[in-house]
Length: 58
Image: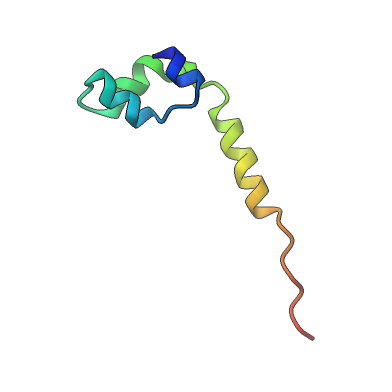
């Protein structure tokens, strides 16, 4: 499963493939393999919120 994680596969898809009943089992077992996930989310959010907003008409 570490290969799927490194390829960016969705944890919910991995959960289904493994037959885990809940996502907590999957993430509890493989969560350490997502070390940069918070960094990646922060980068995406930064890209969204740093877009320039047009000036309001005067």
